[in-house]
Amino acid sequence: MSKVVIKCDSVYKIFGAKAQKMLQEANGNVDAKTFQDKGCIVGVNNASFEVSKGEILVVMGLSGSGKSTLLRCISRLTEATAGKIFIEGVDLLSLSNKQLIDLRRNKMGMVFQSFALLPHKTVVENIAFPLQIKGIKTQETIKKAMEMIKLVGLDGRENYFPRELSGGQQQRVGIARSLAVEPDIWFLDEPFSALDPLIRKEMQDEFLRLQLKLQKTIMFITHDFDEALKLADRIIIMKDGIIEQLDTPANIVLNPETDYVRRFTEEVPREKVLKIEDVMDEISNENLSDFKVSKDSIIGHVANKILSQDKNIAVVDDSNQIVGTVNPSKIISTVFGGKRKNI
Image (cartoon, rainbow, N blue to C red; front, side, top):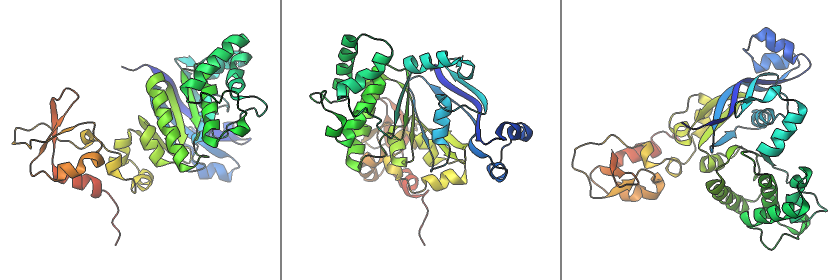
């Protein structure tokens, strides 16, 4: 069983002078409109979940849904109104300011939408800066910064100033700087939203490459569903501070738990999201096609081949062992059956 790195237990964040009093009177049953009418804004409403070691948990929702507030509570940049937050079993809310600073410096890395680079420092100086704050010798910080520059593909630009870099390159510096302290936990708040579509795709690919190598525990905020589907192991969808659903990308698309999640996902191109294992049936003894398909194949990549078969197809694992079957008609119903029909 994977180690739990982040745990939130009934976390609330309510803004307003009467927040604490109203929350106690509500006995945990918070209605956002009622609170708003009395001068309080509900940022996070009874959030409970866990994040496992090496997992990418994407938090998404529309503007004002509470996703950034939730992340700020977990990093304690914003103080939660109520609830418990644990980082590797340590009660975050019980830490002193000094302990909290030590935790942030040694365990957490943060990347935000704004690059926040120091304009008067070069790339290598920007990346080395958080290490220097920790009191590490200059020679060691430069060596580490150069390693991070290579990791994010900025070789040869170490002496450039931020103004001499493109938006994507500046974001890579921000990522390198957050990684320089070797955090176990990585918080990213819409880090690619300011980039144009092509650079954004490149940064998503770069992010996945880094994660494959580094295996960080990550919470990643976005309002872009395509980005969430590409990056996430699991997805949280928030609305008005409430977690509407926490699930795998496939289950959120196939089995939305609320009307809001259903509306959120109804236009998602399922064939680009779902894998064969998400729609396969149990192994049967019937006569199967000679064609076999991997359980990890994205449906859209193999749909044409499957639809050309007149028999069920064997689904195999990495060892070429049959783990299920898939019927061509199941592909059609899965891809097109759950979508809203235009009349």
